Length: 92
Image 1 (tube, helix red, strand yellow):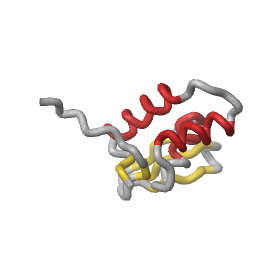
Image 2: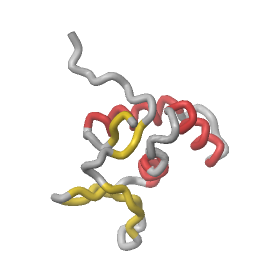
Image 3: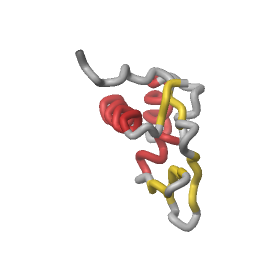
Image 4: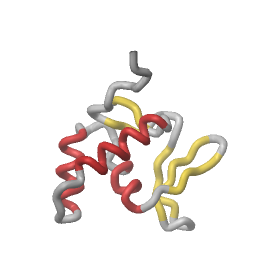
């Protein structure tokens, strides 16, 4: 039996974190009571779309359109898997 959580279909930021753009860091950050996680630009673009209104295919399509590229699904799913393991996102 696997300990892996089922993949998230419609991600949203966990209620334990607050996502915001931090001018001083010039980056998206996740704030939590004990600290802050600075996201790289790619992670910030993904996380700001994790609002519980988009499923993963819609999120991928939106990012591919925004950056006029294709083939991002694997990287986005890998990031979402890591974010889920870190409890940054949950199922909406």
